Length: 324
Image (cartoon, rainbow, N blue to C red; front, side, top):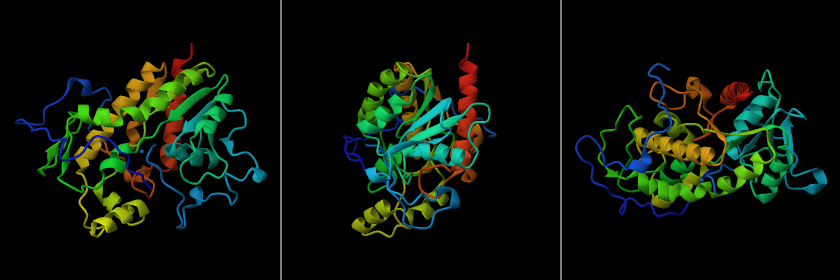
């Protein structure tokens, strides 16, 4: 479930005329995250779902917020892990993988999360205090937000939004309003303020800190099915008087372009804070850079535990590659 974040980007004021061959590009939006090989919201959060979930996503019955039942946050996985994963709702992919025995194979790993691990964690100050307290002499991996492009702009509730990125191989033919990446950067920049404050705290305790890329967008056919189960979007469509199956979506290439920009920004903030940056494993992407269906959770944005298993392996490789 998503929450739309307020900000300065609107489709009526963000128009930038596109010259022949594509929109005007800003120097600050220069590509830094590589495109896939040809052959291969605060953050947007989802709330606990009421429908039956797959076996690997059925939560325990206890409440995360009842102190009589135990601590609010726990480490899911190894009791004394080499790798500590923390962050927003995308960390669930690694949590479910490690609980199923599909975590790291050469090192040990755990995920800091709500005791009751439904939906996004309560990532308030007490959560990050818990992560910092458990970071000592460990490799800490952070999954930060990652859903703004969908929470803000998935539903095309006005003129179609167009975003240019040279790594997007297929351009939609739909007309629309070109939005410069500089404007989107300004719109999302403050979403990294807490990360900028957090990284020095963790680096002072941890052996290393790695910021992990979040999953890319999904194809329209998956999104259309998932929308029928996403109450936030159902409410948005109802308020607009439009059937959820008929409401226009921002085109696939433009969603992918926004995701690339968010990953660029995430990488920039990670490196500025002295952390490493781990991109999405290419095995999880289709030939154009979208999340493959077999690595996708049922909803609009999140990946599944199989994707989490890929991330655990990628984290191990990153950590072992950085050892002296």
